[in-house]
Each structure stands twice: as structure tokens, then as C-alpha cells.
Length: 220
Image (cartoon, rainbow, N blue to C red; front, top):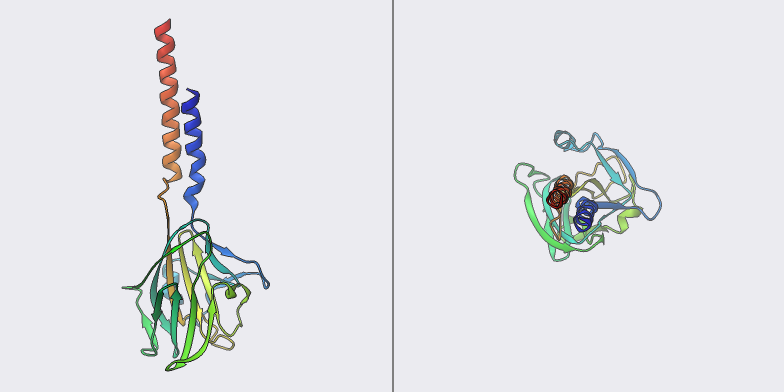
């Protein structure tokens, strides 16, 4: 009986691991801030339809356990050619067309294995040919807020994060729609849902109690 109870309790406590996913990391000033998607973002209406109305600046993106991250390209509104890089993965928007919308059929950039902590990725902008305007990596982004020349905004919800790149934001075009990337995290080990664990634990306890009563009745 004691063994069964211990097993049920252990399974219930294990449910905390089922919450593994993306986290924001804010270790330098200015502190991260969450604002509404600005009106000049060409995809604001599309995101609103998906329930995404805010994004966070001044933070880096990380995960709280090992697993994989799959990245998808969704579009841009920019004259520059922007690139996204993570490990061996790389995707470039090209210069034309200046507006690209793949929300109906997103382009898979690829999948990388990750460990707990900050992720390794960056965005870069090119003004013509191979003329580099600048790059921002995930760690650097912790120090960048609205009004920075270049920065990455993000919307984090559990195992899904939207990354909004702004390739030249120090001005009226600070709208974070120059390259849109969606990241999906998959934990290394599949963890049962909390509700399933609770039901399993309750069932084990019930079985133990029934067995004990049956044994006591047999003795009587």
C-alpha cells in the first residue's frame, strides 16, 4: 500500500515537468517591456486573427529543458534582404518582392537540437547584394528596446514563439515586420499531461485501498 501511494505521489509531482517550453531571459538593462503590436506593422491584422496582439522587446529567448526547435518563415515587408540563422540553418528573404506573405503555407527553415538556456540564432540585414547593414543575435537582443537601430521582438506562448525582426527601426519604420519567424519547441522526452498523471495516481490509490479492504475481509 505504501509503495502504491509513493508511486502515485511521485507521478503527480512529475506533472510539473509537463510545462517545459520557451522562456524569456532578461539579465541586462533596459528591462524587457511588452507593448501592443504597433499600427504600422503590416501584419497586425493577421496576427490579431491568431490572438497575438502584443510582443516583448529587450529580452533573449531560451528554453527550460533540452529538446528541438523548428523554425518557419512567414513573411516580410522590407526593401532589405533579411536572413535568419541558427546553427547550420539559414534562410534569406531576398530583396523582392518587398512584401511576402506565407501565412497560408509557411516555409520550414529547419530543426536544431537545443539545451536548456539561451538559444543560438541571429537576424541580419543587407541593403544591396552582399552589403551588410548589421546583425543582431539572440543574446545581444536582451539590451535592445523600441527605438534601437535593429532589434527582435517576440511573442512567447508555451512551446511557440513568434520572432519579429526590425532591420532599421531607428525612425518611423520601427514596426518589426521585416522578417517574421515562428519557432516551435519540442521537449526531448514526451511528458504525460498533468491531468492524465493525476488520474493515474488516483487510480493507483483506489486499487491499493480496494486490495487492502479485500485482504482484511478475507482475514475476517
